[in-house]
Image (cartoon, rainbow, N blue to C red; front, side, top):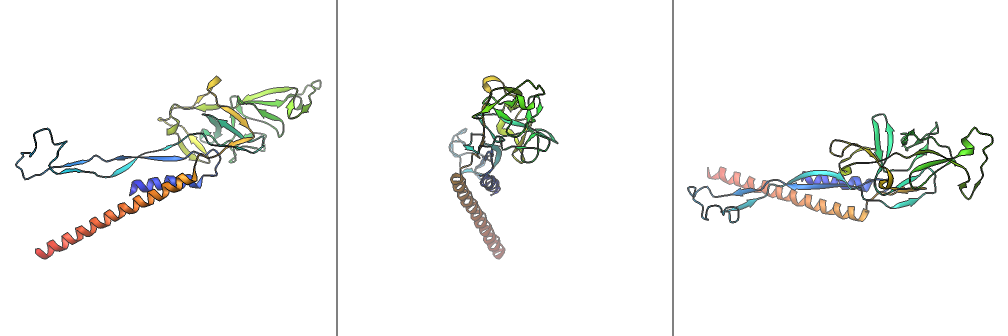
Length: 273
């Protein structure tokens, strides 16, 4: 029953975040407790089967002792792309994570729904700066573009002190651009063991390994003007919730039946005594 409760909590959390950008569903993995092998104790140590055949043909049989939650891990399969047409929304088509600066150190996210902070820094909705390879990314409204490699380009004339540098913008393309920075995208040896911290943030641990900056062809395709939707299928999660509830109720009835039988046994023994 406790194992089913853990699974129900995971399913409920998945359903609650079905509309959260970049959310990755949680999955519980169960394992069985060791089975008990029951043998008769009234045979003076002599088995009714040849010695060594107890595992194949035990005198009485095996008894399962239940299951427990082996691990709760995150499924990082790709979510669908949703177009927003906002320059501050960025999605990753492939593996990897954005890097974010927080009071607790660097954290990682797949939620690319960003905003412009008061100091001109690209931030998450919670106000944590998004990091490029050279530090926090400073941009201005309608003055930056992010290409598929994660490089951030700005209007060179708009930000330059050179009075002789002229530029015109036509059909959302600049004749003169300047490379500002490159988004710091990282990966892990075992990302399934990353720990969720809340606010779509993850932190590394000894099992996931430390963050490693992605380079070259291993970097995912970066898409500006899109966000990645949660990889949660509400229909699948609802079916799992029904299955968990039925399994929980079945185990509850087993316990109630066992308790009732034990009560009858105690009462009958007391009467005979």
